[in-house]
Image (cartoon, rainbow, N blue to C red; front, side, top):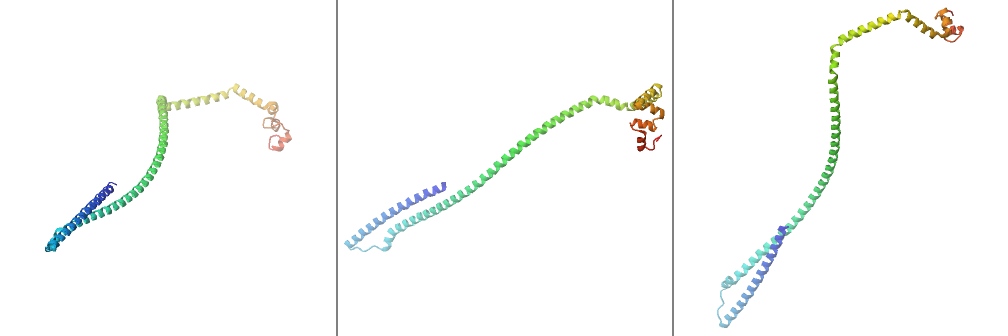
Length: 244
């Protein structure tokens, strides 16, 4: 934009220069023409010979051609300046177009980046929450591990005692078991135990105890009584029973 402004200013200055030079040389041409008219009139009045054409050309033609050359040069520069201004406008238009395309692309990229950033922030928050949960779980697990380790330390003396005396313990348990089995055998051989067993068995026989003692418990009459059925009915289902 600054270059275009400079070109416009240059064009304005060049136009003014061309106008000034045109006015100057127009004025000079009028003055020369007037002077020539006066010189021509004087020659006719005094009948003087005309000056050589080369003298006239060298005096006046040089100024005219020099002025035209300067004006042509300024107009050439002016035209080039206009061309440069036009190109500058075109370059600026293209630059503006490229800038707008770039801004559109950058805005889209910014929008995509913002969306990605929001998604990543959400994911980060979720991961931080998950990390916090894992830290809590780790703290709880470490607490439980510490409690278990303390408990193991506490019971270790007892465990060591059992391990160190396991053979003695097994021997003592075996001796205790043998003593208990021997005691049970001795108790079963005592009259009191046998009487208790007999009485308990008689209670299970109930009202059939007398029949079962008289006929033995394997006899059909005892079994029929215990089954609360008749002897023929029991024999019908148990033909091999004693007494059928």
